[in-house]
Amino acid sequence: MGWKQDHVHFKCRNYESTVQFFKDNFGAIEEGRVDSNGMMIVTLIVGDSSYKLSPKKPGETVDPATSPARYGVYHIGLRVDDLAAEVAKMKSRGVQFTQDLVQVNPKLKAAFIEGPDGISIELLQRD
Image (tube, rainbow, N blue to C red; front, side, top):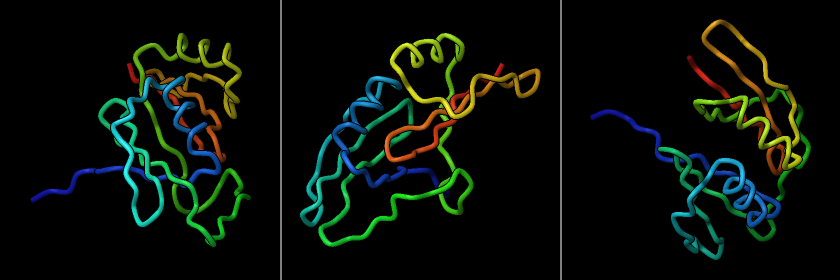
């Protein structure tokens, strides 16, 4: 029996705006919402990946300050066939880029954006 990725879960200040961000920029499909012990969890599908979004639990302390380099989840990577076209669309919508589009090597182009709550998202194209 082998392991397979099931999901990545993010705590969000405003999960409705985070849901909309993923829908607007990555074509996310909302799979559903469930109440888990009084906390609403939204499941989004982007490509073949599942993302869970939820607010903090009542009384829970969440540190809003992180630096670009940190332990734990460093960033998520989302791949597309025409990165230049997607970067142009995102820039026209005002998405904040932390690294503009670069040719990393002959077969890889990449850029980084900052999503809601400082989520670092690598955008990449592999040729």
